Length: 362
Ligand SMILES: *Cc1c(COP(=O)(O)O)cnc(C)c1O
Image (cartoon, rainbow, N blue to C red):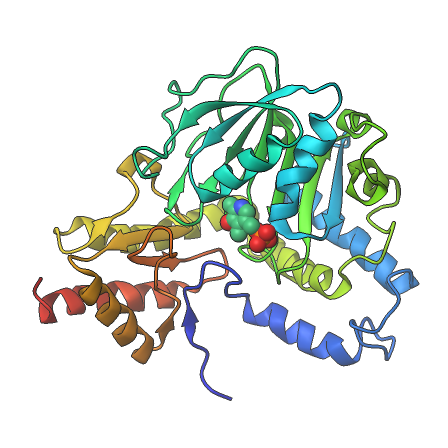
């Protein structure tokens, strides 16, 4: 087999080799049943036990209290853009405040407007989304049911280093920094995260929802789109994405074994620091995000010209590092270094960046 490429892709993204090996074995034999994980009934005793263990491990890692439900849904992070307001706003045309810090927030705002009134409490669009608001810089419109924000802006490489302080209930899209650091779940009404950045393959989305919110959806919301439907049935109202849940489950076991979220955060800080040090060492590379908003997950940067950027991406690929081209909306380059991305790969990129700058004067 070819040596594994260092995959800096923003999502789907690199997964731990141990989890891939478990998945390979489980393709043919899940839990000693002689039946593959793609083939086994989600209602089998073995899978029923497995999904409970996945939930238990997630609860332990994040310290999720008993008054929260954990759901395994489909439809990606993007479906939560409408499920959230459908369930929490639709009844009697209520209002919510959204913080607009990038493409994903913008999409969530557009969807929420289909179901209720949306106030924008911070808008980074005019500045080109180079940062998230400072802790005292956003406003929450009076009468808002919730304050919605995107904790990590995958495309621009900006991330909140704090949890917004407000009396209003928090709703957060944590798709691209889920489980990358400890988080006080009790501060939130609802957290969601598509799996394919930090947790597993695309196709399962985690929703953590405070129990009392399950009753908020009006009767006009279709059964499959009501959180309560899935909460009442332990995410087994219909067939859940079994394989995806399996891989996520193996990733969670590894996270637990490797010291929990404090340890994960420590490693993520060390990895990101290697790249930001290169960005800060001169003016050859320009970091996209402002310093206080820098993401530990996605490091976005520019070189002097698009031509140099293309050369950079191509030569990096030839050196075993893939996925460094920036998102089409932000341009430039981006290194996504999620939990599972190995430190050796970050070290290799940092060295490559230093060498490239020397060989290719701007
Ligand atoms: C990737 C991403 C999404 C969209 O996820 P899909 O599963 O592709 O729908 C939403 N929010 C953030 C922050 C993301 O990074």
